[in-house]
Length: 258
Image (cartoon, rainbow, N blue to C red; front, side):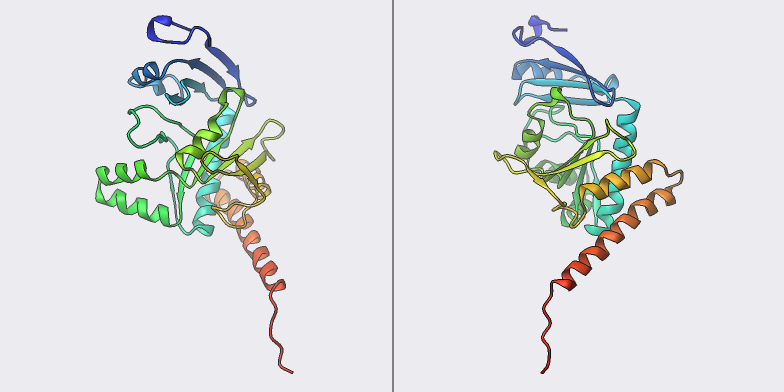
């Protein structure tokens, strides 16, 4: 696949990886100029996930497995329901490319899921209502609050740091290799040029834990109607909300009259 005539680096040959969920990932290293030129091609006609990153000099083309796409769709639903309840508002950006302002069109990171939550979701809605130009300008200036990745492999070296540098606040990583019914979920707080920090509960969706998301994914996966899927997530969110209220009440000191 390497082709020195278009600037692909001969010292870094192209490679193919098979992800833990069975997805096929092609990785090509090239100089920044070549990556920008290749961004003019509509790679999504052949690959469902495409990353053209001139900063890292990396082109990643993924053909996701059926399980990858199923879990990504499930997580979209989980975040939509949970964020509506805990954040008050949510706008999904699943197929959008994340890049720095002024970066060449077609380049950037393409996560499995990306979301504005709370006030930023409401602000994005207002920008959408104002028209495409306003919405595009808002998106260029404001990174998502939350990004979700279903299948991270050794082909994705540096991806987490790139999300942090782009301004993403929080990243959820889902590992469904052991069990799609109870996948391992990890929450990371992201800060530009700093090491990602593991979270025991989400800062974007207060009180929600990785274990809650794992349970919700399993329940939604076995649901067969929209109502069942929504109820599966809502029950977990309600349980977590009630639990957080009990913790606050137990930790509160009340003045007693003598």
